[in-house]
Amino acid sequence: MSYLGRLVLGALLASIAVSGWATYRIMAQGGIDEQRPADAIVVLGAAQYDGRPSPVLEARVAHAVELFRAGVAPILIVTGGKASGDRTTEAAAARTWAVEHGVPAGAILAEDQGRTTLESIEAVAGILRARRLTSAVFVSDRSHMLRVLRIAIDQGILAWGSPTATSPSDADPGSRASAVIHELGALAIYFAGAGRTVVEQPVAATP
Image 1 (tube, rainbow, N blue to C red):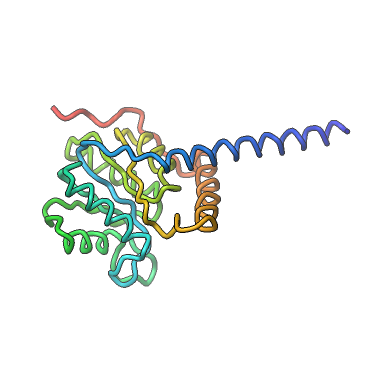
Image 2: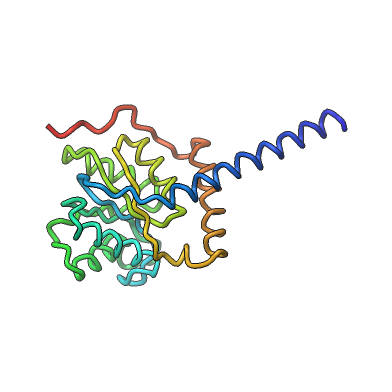
């Protein structure tokens, strides 16, 4: 085999190894529920239809409301902006659902500008810093948790994950595979530094 051939083969094997390890980490993190007392519960946004949460968003918010009822945190932060042409935001749809299911409106904060996971978590970090809060339990789909927690930690948040077990993205092997493939690409982009902003200092501790 030529030098170029060996180089290509080596690169291919390395890519397979990295992808395999990343897939393992995505699935492993998604299988862990780290819920514990924290300053806030953060639910990541997903599609909404004219104010009605999509099945994915509803599954996330329902789990976050369960955590709130269990006393995990006194604050629920809903996230997500709106796509072009939408009349409302993902955060607003999540907030309405949570209020209708027993969460006091005064206990809910909203990040309603972010259109990506990174943008939303950057904004959440600002909300926490403004209130001198340090920790949060993040709620999303199982396949999403590794990236969510990595970004949250990079933003200086003491973060744990509590994935919902009822998301359509985890309903069958095909859906799970599709979600994992999406996350492999998103993680590659994030770790390559595209749009990555790391906070050097952690959020200040509450006095």
